[in-house]
Length: 415
Image (cartoon, rainbow, N blue to C red):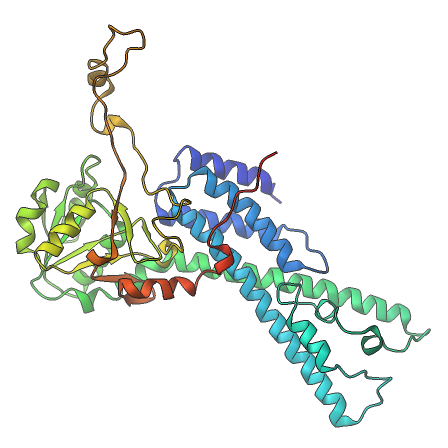
């Protein structure tokens, strides 16, 4: 079995060095790592859910701190915490239903109370109050008086009963872990197939002979346009090049290879060309709880141009990019400064150094931000793998994926 701590340290190092790029790759690898953490976590007989939550939260704190800008990492950490809580509640509800059936069965069959002790309403209420405790029956009934739980001792069956209880405990311990791992596997599957789910909605959004504008290169946008083209939609695409990395050039070549009519324009030409456009379709780095979008730099300019000319502005993104935080939360670092070499060679930059001073302070400064923030009022529609949604609905969609207690994964104080 792999060493979990070694895997965590390796992943943290990759995040710090920016060796993992893209929300999908970050989300998938985070989910796989947390699945390993859960599978190798030693489980006690009691407080199993709390044990898993503590383990995932501890690892999550390190991952989020390694690269706070990669919000997909924090999203998946919170999603897994929510999964643990949900699976624990499901197991608790199932166990309580079983207890109720046993109690009713005992009453209906008129069994002797000393042979089949009935469960009182107080016992079930005590179990309901222990929703974050382990889903084992023994734990659920901790608040029940011993006289109501313990059967009359039998000298002949003591050993067999002890072995049976031990087996039941082991089975219940494995069940919670198994259910959580299965749910994480489903999450990974959703991350892998999000592009397919989103692309299925392309035909209903893109119509014949329309002109679509996008900026830079987004895999989700690319698959979305490919899907519409495969359904024999005839449309034209304007691609703003997305300086300074010029990923729009790459997207344009990929679209042409699929037979799409494509025009590359400079970023500064967006306002000049927007009057010819029927719709803007862009990707996102993250979708915030207020419906705002963190997207590659330059997209806010496109959104403003679309609003000025009443052009629909559509954002396509997988549900793993839904972030339960707001842009004004102190935990959210909205931007990341990339290398100045994207704009200016280091040789040219060194020519601008003032060596007349002792420190050689530069007279020229290069700022290369990675992201823009687009407020929700500029977004017309979100297309996710769960369907199309308005910006005002995003907070309700986010509430389905996260628990309120896990919105902020706080760092533990260092000694």
